[in-house]
Image (cartoon, rainbow, N blue to C red; front, side):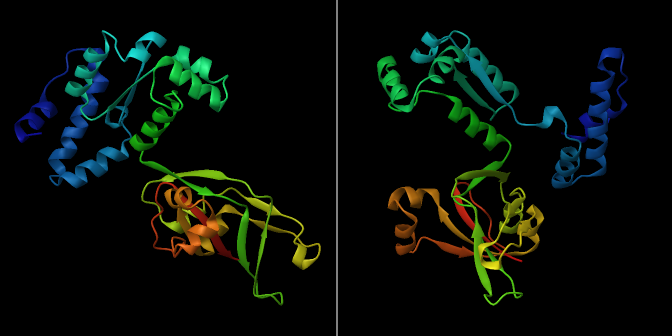
Length: 263
């Protein structure tokens, strides 16, 4: 935004009462731009205002099942042109509520059969996965997985310097901000109550979510793609793909993490 336009925005009178709020916001941003000539500082201050108009948008277009299957609708091209002109870079995702309502009642094999019947690409024809992925991308979020409630606890009170405690195996996905470090990613895990501890009699231990961050030791990390390729954790480890990472490690989307925390 050039200085001439900024000055005009700051000084231009407002004649319509309905536009006061919008013009006040524009003037305030323009005033900040005059005070903060460095672009990075302008962006930082504007982001702190959490303005709706500054947030990325994912446009979902509900089509009839017929239009979704043939990927044609008279409005799609017009909507895409408007987005490219007014909000370039924002995502446009066509989907069909009618189709999704039918698919949600089907099993995985039935969905594949329905996809072949409709002439859609092989696999699950639902657009919900694509919508979720686009939402995560626009919000700069990622997911990592834990495959078991099992954590390494170091405790000098007992003869064993470290031991493993946990409950039944289960797979959980945790949503974190892109670029997060390992200790902060471990800290999002909700409180885990473990009682009793087999190795210490009838005592109980509660690990709060902050303990995983504050008492973080390290993490054993493998990528989802590696697990998919090799089939089992043992095979991933044998291939040298299981990595031990410390506090500086930046968690990547799809990581499978086994956190180790001190007591």
